[in-house]
Length: 240
Image 1 (spheres, helix red, strand yellow):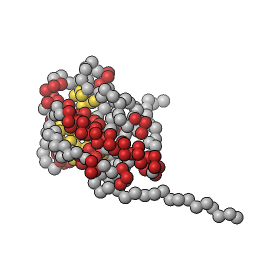
Image 2: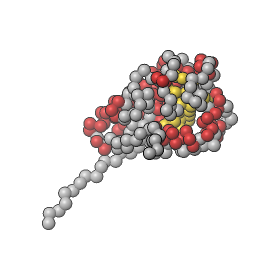
Image 3: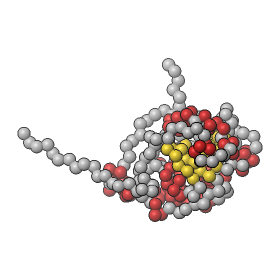
Image 4: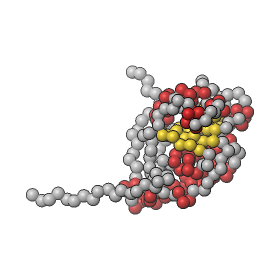
């Protein structure tokens, strides 16, 4: 009986201790530090630690005034930050079933109420924001974080209506056109709320470099390609 053919085990790469990405994909030395006035808290679902294409850690690394937490639930925003804050002055980005395109507005960042309708006095609300919470995960994971943390209802919910789809393109398909990566969504929010185009450009530039690095490695190191995500309907299924 002939011997079974030898197989080469997949190559393993050490992780960068800062960004957590495999070293061939690390761009830490290219990060341009950003001094942001509006604080950013990124809450990442434990199952969304995508080493290759994830952007949560890169976003937190680049922003001087930011916090990244991994988990499913926290008692309050103040517990996350380790100091007392007023959640009413914090925005939380959670799209859910709400769409800017369905609302009678020309704004690309919209503060909405619990019924999904635009709040009155949009400008005054957004100008009073002192921090933003961004949920990092798939649609179902973001929904899980939203429902597990009742304190989020005390924050001002906002949704985005970007002019263009995510730069991920075919690398990571989103179920909706307004679905953005964490770094893109944070760039859009900070750039508009702080009125600083340079902040948005710097974060998007980092994302573009990350994608370029990935595409370059993808052609030569197939082991770095992430496993396809299961296709799930982000909407609540109707009972039969």
